Image (tube, rainbow, N blue to C red; front, side, top):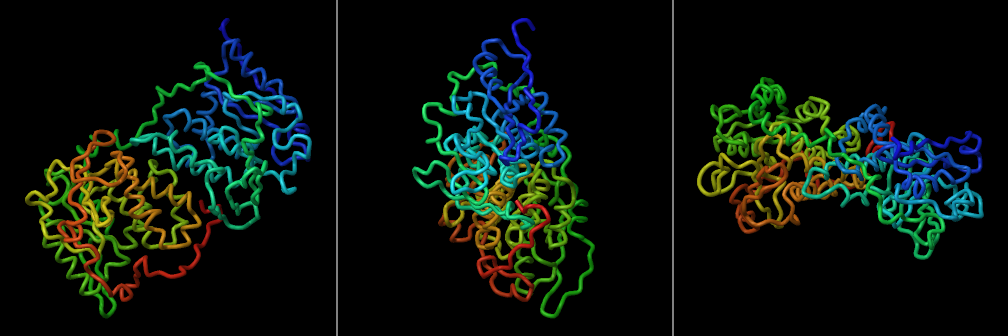
Length: 554
């Protein structure tokens, strides 16, 4: 095209870019929508980068980025779904830095005079050593939302950031945006957390703390943050303003879109089968129980399944327990639920694992990554309930809850045929996680599970402490998932709300009705857990440390 200039990479010999005086290669990665750009853009933005000495300059356009992401050796990268420019650039940034190492800048930066010294890290001194004479493995600009990141190849911190990026992509489909939360992804904003992997080398244990005020370079074990004080007057980097529209990525034709929107009508027309649930829960299993325990069986009633019901929410109750052998007190409680004229399924540990293994779960690309990190039965039950209701829908209740004062299917307090999701306000004022009902493939289940996965990725240290299941995978994930789906701050009045994909959420009750047990008596059955080889998550003290997998458990 006569009005455009084809952009070519500048590739220097490896003895220059990968010399022994530094861990981070002198390779600069820049992300552009296309390689054919107007002369004015080339002159003002592209050429200054090409003039940087002693660095290879690699331009990655949309076509190349898309190909690399779709053919990457990691499944979770190939499955990643991006519809926002920031999401695409972040994915590409961490993939290229992890695979190849180097420096990555947003394209609206141009190099300043400081780059003439051969390094942006610490001009005038060794590029291999930073503050406190520690090796430089990773660098980020602390005030820039990750607009500048540099790293050695195969650095664990970059892999963790890549995982966090994928984990955060679900916000593209919520009432929020990926851009709003992208600062959470970058290492400079993840403070006071430990990222722990199997200690094959010290490089897999990284401690991140806040930078000390007025400290130019702040060093952690393997992490250096370049404070904004290192960029006075554009000495090293200058911002291009206004940003040229020709350098904006156009993702309007991106085929990636939220699965729950596509599957909404398909699920309604082809609901899951009752036979699938029977197989999942080993319906025909014949059990013999230890002394003091009794077997629990499922209950399948006519007009209380999928195709036999006129309700969006399948009239089927689901609980989970370690096994199907429970004490008489819990048996009597389950019989009370059965008397509400619902079909009933009890999911033991084997059924929970069968659900995890049932399919690849492409819509949750990091699910298999985090499951080995979960050492708490409560956390696993949280993840299971979100995944199960995402696929099968129905009514979930904790096993120690008892039926409430009002029938779920009669009167003003009932789950109505048109209800798409149903939550009561719990005693603390936000929607309940211990008792709720949803239709299959409702966005709320998607967001609750996505948030639980992201919480585990961010706070791996907290996985060591079972008590934090509440905030990571429990009510905290539930509350945030609902906020993603319908907006708001997590505290709602009784009403019907419209959310993502025009899917509705019915919220009923208030703190008072929760205390009275109008919809469900919370924690009404107590004791006997030890007899069933179970324990309440709040009573676990000093749980055993998790057994880390061969790859970093993050």
